[in-house]
Length: 367
Image (cartoon, rainbow, N blue to C red):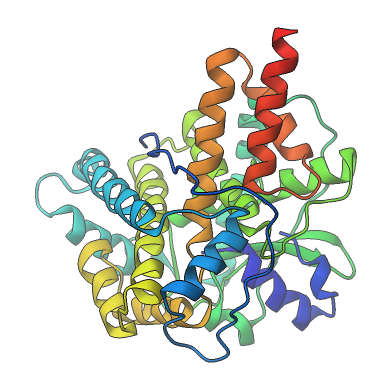
């Protein structure tokens, strides 16, 4: 996954204060158990391993801003995963015919040199060529805004092995930067380029930052806001799909595969920290169900063990943002740009705050 941990790592490496590091089918609704003031989770695992169910519930409550039922989250993640695998059949068939299974195709797309770039210059050029198309292709989903320049750089080679394919964050000398992991071991899958631009740039984290600069302080990336901030990144990938920007079977596979990874991560994070799964079990699941190469699966399993809740925040935030969007659009079917404007103006977003803002907007529209 993407921006938060990478942004903090880059902030340290590039001399930027850590607190400045910014960053299908409809999801099943995630019903909150309780809503109220969120106190910091009392547990903080100091070494990689299972956080334990009680501690993990507190971590999820802090990430989301409200308590959420782990069993419902787990079951929802499994349902999403199964639905996405079904959706992948069409673009996989367009690429490979009937010669391979979906899981076999995912393994090929993630690791075969026909579908993976290794040359840093080629990788950087592919991302650069995609940014303008996505910037121009999503404007109808937003109210007018003044664009902010976005630089593009490669992630330092020494950080590449433990970094995501792409990230977004500040630079001490050139404003906001789209970081590309052009030195990632094993290369960058070509299918990751379009969704990476959607997640990190337009309409993803860079557009979040633009709204913050124009309408108030940029939204902070803290444990209390992580589900909202990273949920927006995944939601931005969906918006690009709705705009028709994944215009090849390969790009469509990339979007769906990453969405599969999002819900696989939610399932595995709960499995590891609340159900006692080992890192080996998590890695095996990623290889068998999502077609990840062994080295990638083991890398993500280590992240699950070391960062309880972080990889779950993407799915939790995405599902909640989409759920609130459905509520808003039932009242105003043409109000998508207004919903995005309201959502991106929240100064320190949490999911209860988003729910309250949607309810308040509904009250105002009826007055």
